[in-house]
Image (cartoon, rainbow, N blue to C red; front, side, top):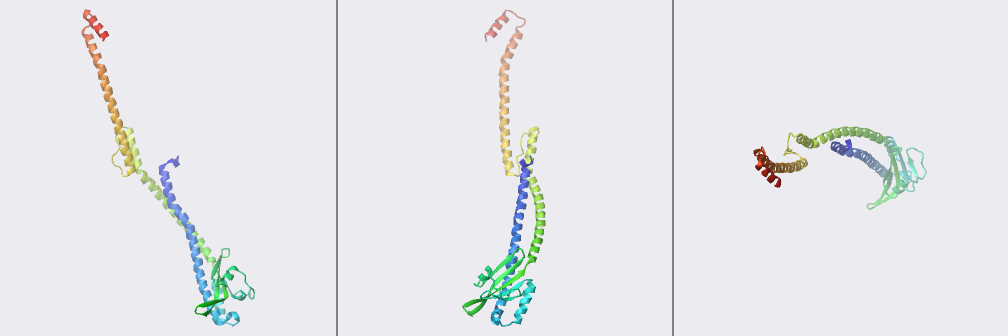
Length: 288
């Protein structure tokens, strides 16, 4: 069976070593790209929220003072991010909503509650592809103390992220196909190269079986094959020595058996035809 072939096993091992890391790294690469993109967008939106925070505090926007420059900035950010900007006071009541949908309402959302405590957080909605950043509005009481007077929530549409991930996935699949093809070629060449010494050993053994040679070659590049050849030659030498001893034993025994018979036959030939002395010799021969 093919599964019992060493060549197939070497091919399979080399192929898997080449393809498995690539297959395992693709999801990791896509996850890292998504995470880095979201974190980068979070940093960007947080910076924009901090600019709004400074402008809100310095102009008294949360307590009703108009600020047309801030309004223009909010509209520009809403359009640029294709998202939404909401500002809430310390009681989480909506003071400004770029959608003009929830002004005057109180927002009860975990991230907003944490933001009113001074934390800056984000939430990525995988269904809609929106990044929602909640950032506190800080009022500096003095050089050592800041007070949270409100919360800014900015959402940013990141539909492009899923498009980029799909595009990268296609590139990764193409790269994996190329890597698989290269791994297959390398695995095939490796299996042929690694088994070449064993093929040479097999050919040498065939020559011995066909009696073209009586020993294996003394030099092989692979140490493992060299050890096998040395041990095989040792076995051949021992078998040869045993065969020579057997032949010597058979020759000696044959000689020892032939010598008395030859002597007896010579005497018999010399005494033929029979005479009185012949019967005496025959009696002696029988006694012997």
